[in-house]
Length: 188
Image 1 (cartoon, rainbow, N blue to C red):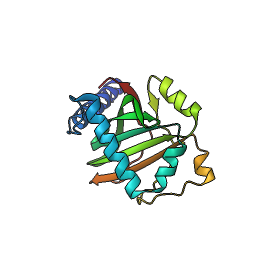
Image 2 (image 1 turned 180 degrees about the vertical axis):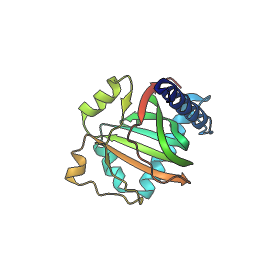
Image 3 (image 1 turned 30 degrees about the vertical axis):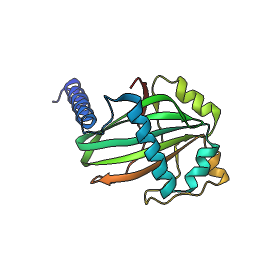
Image 4 (image 1 turned 90 degrees about the vertical axis):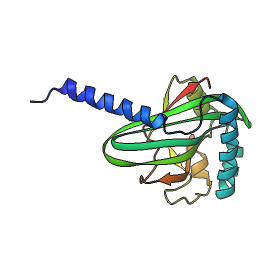
């Protein structure tokens, strides 16, 4: 008979090891602090606006945007993701955040992608900023589909409190979802 505490311990150690390895995958952000994060955020936004012009109108309507320029996700049985980015309000970086995600199950592969969260209401932005660790849930509305198509910003979409754009995927892992992703404020 298997020991359930041992199984949990093995799962936790595997998930932590995967996140640690993923964090070391060289997303290039770290020692140079906020200037490097801001430069990558600028480049990411320029690329998003170029590829998906409809996101410019969302950015103008948003009360704030969390931009994660490069998230590295890997899995071999256990999976994890890590990245760093900036919260922009009125085009200015006001805080910096890390993103961490852990998962278990049958999986293998690695990918990198960028994502932007558009906070469409002041309440959603305030809740995010006051939270000690905000987790993205299934209620997130995506404005760029799995096929990379930009969805029009119609009245239904704009009424959602938080919108997500996931783009720039590269790697050998299918799908990038933000469900279960945790964001934490950092000092770069």
